[in-house]
Length: 284
Length: 75
Image (cartoon, rainbow over all chains, first blue to last red; front, side):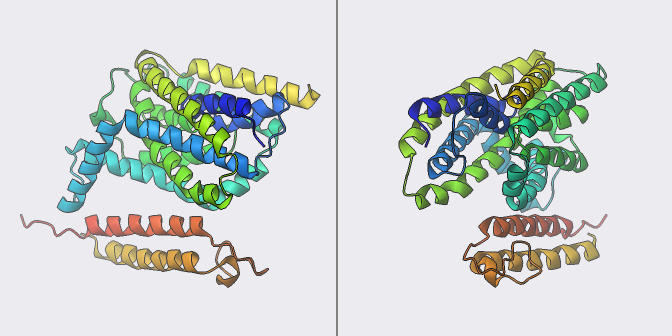
């Protein structure tokens, strides 16, 4: 069972942690463990909660970037009609880059998501992964140094990414199937390592997250109906909270990355991971 | 146009499309033993996620073949 209070708090957390580079999956494992909430993650009620909160987050992302998605879909259709991805067709190229980046995580996620999450579900392991997530972000920021110029978001710079880079970003995204690693964090790290500015890397990461989160939610919809709607009330409350916090998060982050880096999130992940590891190990 | 690449992509795309259909219509127990997800114990689970994975790869290969097979303009 999941209570309304738990659903609301976890929904708010889901909306924030899904989009901030701090791992939503990791937090939804760690927070209940730390608060001693005995939530059965395989229960029908929790499955309903997961489906609806992810659906809410994905719909917020689609709504926030709807103009971009219209352009991208038109670009994809244009390229199929012309049987060519023209270098000057920014949105056609961007659309195919997003598809190429989605394929690795899509395939690995479809085939191994459940086994990966079962293997890495222990709270202490998740805490360790959270620390590693922070280390990756900090390492990329440090290695990148000042060699890459910043600047406002520019879809032409996104479209200038090579397909090889897009595959590498997609492979980085696969790591996020392990609870504790952040999808936003790893795809941003991949974008930053490819020479994108923080704003462009963040934008690519949010666009890339949308189909994966939406597909993951849609695939689980049959589970929602299979369990006879158990826990749907609590899940709807959680989803509404997730939608609000996801909207505020994406709005904040798009502005934040115009001028700032992922360093604070990296440090947060390392501190939170170490603290969670100690607390879980000591059984506090 | 790279003809061998187009042919290989089309063949692989068709094979993966067939694999996707098999995953959709056969339960885990009815899958060929070399398929990931095969379960001889006789469960009635359908691996729809595997089907979607194979289907996505098939579509990606068809798209690749579509772009690669565009006739080049004579210069």
